[in-house]
Amino acid sequence: MKRLYATLKLFLGCSIGVFLGRCIYLYFDFKVRPDLYAMQSAPWYVDLEIQGIITAVLAAVLLAAMWLVRKNIDKKG
Figure (spheres, rainbow, N blue to C red):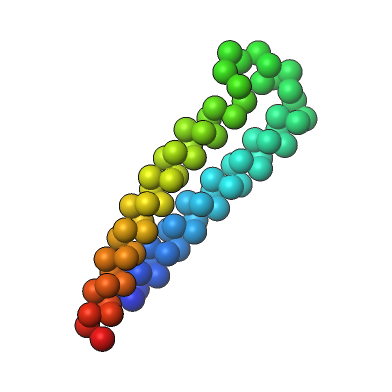
């Protein structure tokens, strides 16, 4: 169970890290090439909002699973 908890914790950190890395990359790409993003009908950050919602839902599911695993670990001693 401790290995499962560590794996869930690692996956949570990786998913948040990927989201933050993508945010930083897209922001700097927008600063370098604003004309490329001006051609789109939607603002440049709309993709990040969608990915942020997905990341938040994934984080909530992972935190719930981690809570259940931790509760099971504490119960077994």
